[in-house]
Amino acid sequence: MKKLSHGILSICVSGAVLLSACGHTDDPERTTIGEAINGSSPNTNQVPSTQEEPMNAIKTSTDAISDSEQLIDPAHKEIKGITADEFKRGVFIDFDQYKQSFFDNEIISKFTGNIEAVVENNPEKFKENLNKDSAATNKYHFYYTSESEEGREFMFYDLDILEKVNINQREQIRVGVRFAQKDPDGRVDNTGITYFFTKNQVGECGIENID
Image: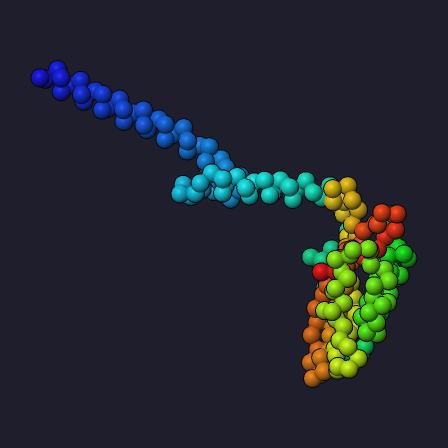
């Protein structure tokens, strides 16, 4: 009877050791995934698929942009807002101080024409330099109000982003512009928006999106 009890005890102890070893084998793999995403040990209640998906997303976003060139670093660009007393309807940007490299006369001309169309409330002029099927086609409704309505007025006064990037071997130029908008009640708000230029099928550069 003593031998039988001893045998049963040995089997139980051996089983516990095996279970402990299996648990130890799984933990390092889950920790590695969690550390790669979060920099810390993961929540063991999470299923593996929810941990792997962010890794794929990070890889995709890292590989998308192969190189870039900045003429304005938004992190170091100081922008002074426009007050109600300073507000003047129109475009008041010194483009000469920024003109170099990819920000050439062609881009400046097309960009200026678009923001002038906003100031003038001219939807046809606004569409002139948009790429075909451009996502910016409906963006004019963000600015424009019909002549029968008393709408906003706009003052474009500085740039805060100038960057060229290659995304999946396609060149994209980003132009961030600061502007003040004056509402009918006289309130003036300062904000910014970014223009995205790409080349169309025949190699002409145009506005792909405004966001």
